[in-house]
Amino acid sequence: MDKRKVIFAYRRGFITLQECAQILGIDSMRVMGMVDVPREDIGSNRLRKVKVNG
Image 1: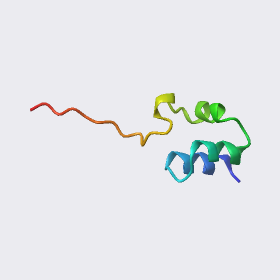
Image 2: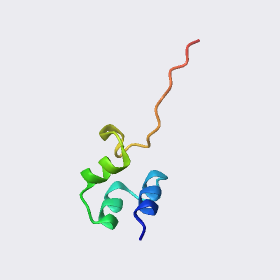
Image 3: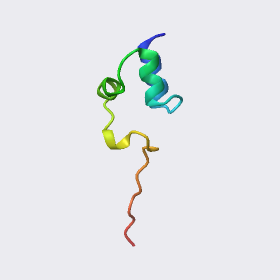
Image 4: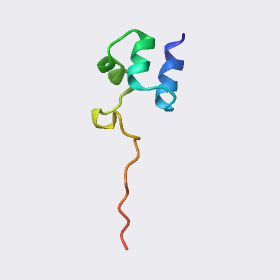
């Protein structure tokens, strides 16, 4: 499978970080480096609350 498709699927939320790493045959930490995902975003829904003044 094309690595770009696997990374795209991970970024879109279709597969988990662990699944992505398993498909690529590499360590999860290396996947994080490849996709430039901050560690605190792993396992979260990547949504941040925005404080609205008013």
